[in-house]
Length: 253
Image 1 (cartoon, one colour):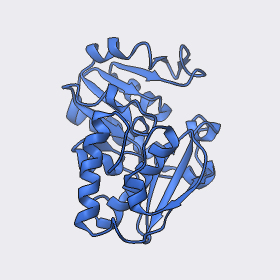
Image 2: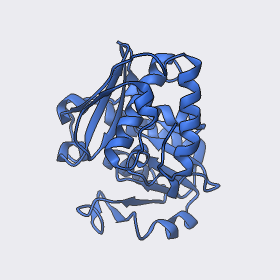
Image 3: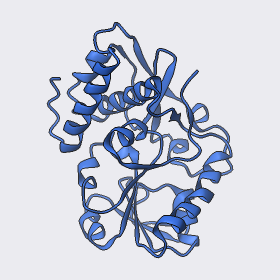
Image 4: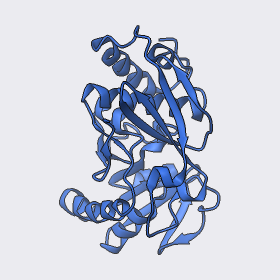
């Protein structure tokens, strides 16, 4: 590995990823890994709501395919990639696009090896079903706990708040910061993170934080960390992080 990205999270993740690739003798294989940017309808289907970030065109869902197995990653970067797993492992990971390609292919590898098959984003009515299951999950595991959501996800945030949980939401999108949506004030993920991390009991974070380079600000903080979304499928499995994504589907063909 020649990765030069200075991230404690990625240093640990790369070691585990490389070990997995070696275990299945994939590193030296001439495997073609392609990634394409899905349209919002391809990614999430037809939904009742129109306030998902991907429907606003600010993020795209990259999809990597390897030996019939698929993995995805959310990113605001654009582009396509074709290469081998060895090239992926040696990516510098210095920008959002490189990290998104890395994460999407990691998810495809985890799917191919059978370590984590739910690597495809839910579609149509399933995002709403996910929010219903989120209520059950937090009542069962973190009842009466303070929740910090990193990355505004409207259905999840709204459902958790309506159930009576104390939830704070941080986001990086200037169009969201400072606004009240569905009864929730959205705060600045850059300037307010330290304050609200200290006050919270549970971190409920978009796994896109792996792609956008903010993961080190929330990882290993001696508080429960729960990822939501498909981007974190492979990383959560390799790093022992809880992932809440009950409606994700299999990436196997």
